Every structure is written in C-alpha cells, then in structure tokens.
Image (cartoon, rainbow, N blue to C red; front, side):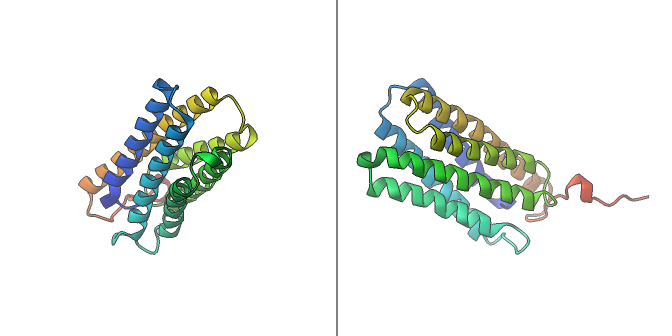
Length: 194
C-alpha cells in the first residue's frame, strides 16, 4: 500500500461511507438492492486493492500478496452476486460473512507487515477487526431481523470507511513530505542520535 495509491484508498473509504449512509437512512431499501450496493462496494474495494498490489511502487518488503488476495476476494464476491442474484440471498449472507472475515484477516496481516514501515497502521488493523466481527455476526445470526442487519452493516461500513479514509489521507501526507516510496519508520525502529 504505497503513497501513490492514497487516492484509491480514500475512494474505497468514501464508497463504504456512502453505502453505510444508504443502509442507515433508507432502511426500507430492498434486500436485493442492498446486496447489489454491497457487491458494487466489494468490487470497487477489490479493484483498489489489486491496483495497489500491482503498482510499480510495490516492493518485495511490502505486503503486495495480501493486497492482491484481498482484491481478488472482493471481485469474487461481486461476480458471485451477478451469477446468482436474488434466488441465493440467504446463501449470499454466508458469502458476505466469509468475504468480511477473509478481508479482515488480510487487512490485519497487512497492518502487521506495515507496522515497522509506517505510523498509524493501527487504523488498518482496527478496520480488519471490524470486518472479522461483521463476518462472524452474519454467520451466527443469518436470519436476524433484516432491519437490524441492514443497520449493523450500515454502521460497520461508515466506521470502516472513516478508518480507510484516515489511512489514505495519512499516505497522502507521507507522499507530500517524502520522496515516493520512502515511508517513515515506526517510532520503535528509529535510531536515537546523540
């Protein structure tokens, strides 16, 4: 996740917030439309992660493999919805839960890999924890009230989006203050000068 890709990261966060606001303020929206919005968000997030993974700025010491897997998972969720729409809504809940868990684990892994490269990696780790929590909740209570599930997903998307935007803006500041690709060290890894 290099500094050149900060715009994609922010766009992903904005898409999550828009999706979350739609879920919270238009709860009467049909389940099919809601899943379609979620699939569009998963597709956009997947493409953003793939672009970041395949960027020229990506180096061997960066977690490009985790980003690529996260991107492929997001695109796969969108493709599954296009292939099997409304008839598989309940099955799609399990797919959604699986995507959230896998995506969250990969985000946590990316944050762990970046902890010595950039500051503020905790925001990405927290977004990953929220993703895992959403996935587990969907698995445990798939038939919960539709309205409650819509609100939970909406709230998750807003918090997740805000955290991802913060990561993107942090990357933008890094790009403006340092040569591209030169990310600051974690405070614990800086050398003390006498």
